[in-house]
Length: 330
Image (cartoon, rainbow, N blue to C red):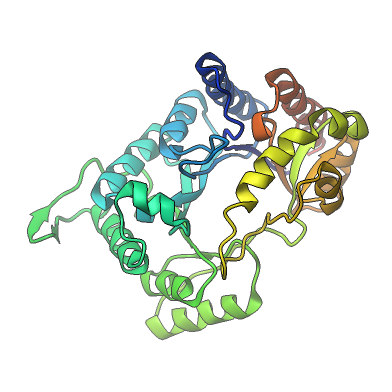
């Protein structure tokens, strides 16, 4: 049985004690290694900057550490905010992680929507669409085998990545310009929320440009999971950690930007009722995997500053009582 078992790591929940922060980052890498050894299909990391609760700002650094400790699982970044970077340096860094992982790195190329992130990166917020085009075009040229003209000079960016013709990635976004960008470059398109009209527009643009692509979005009932034998007790003990992450994320709400995990309350009870973050038993998780071959298991043990002992208990329950039994059935 092939199951989609994924570990989510975004390091939310900033501790004031630097020693405890170090322990959390080290635990993230240890969890990735454990997940790889137990048959998880992927480890997913994310990127946000100047977040009050410490959201991971350096996904490529963490991805490199994970690559060094894993052998088989996919390492994905969703999303890598490529418009915040120098494009040549980004091409180099991605190539290095791709080589370290032997081609296991994938990412969603996100533009970003928070003005403060562009401010601290010294990148143009008003002209972010044009800059995004420049970054993506430069990445594709930099990973090619031939030198190319860059700012008036011929350059040959090295090293070249292991994955050919380049590391696999999708273009993120929820707008027609994002769909046009992906179609023009012949890249797959990944809206964060399924939108049939936008997806049809993307395919029409592919036909217009003579390119071929596909779209990918999370399932409509996608949820973030934490595994516990007693969900009621776990919500009572740990609900504040889920709320910590969700309130921070929801504070970034931007007009016209659709996001899959928006929340409009500051109540643990309301968050539980919404069922975007769920605490379920191993038996319930096994049932979901068995009932739906396309079920996407996204386990988030370190959510919002979760105590490390509780986080380890959750991932071990998922690995030992869900993933391993299901793999053994195949």
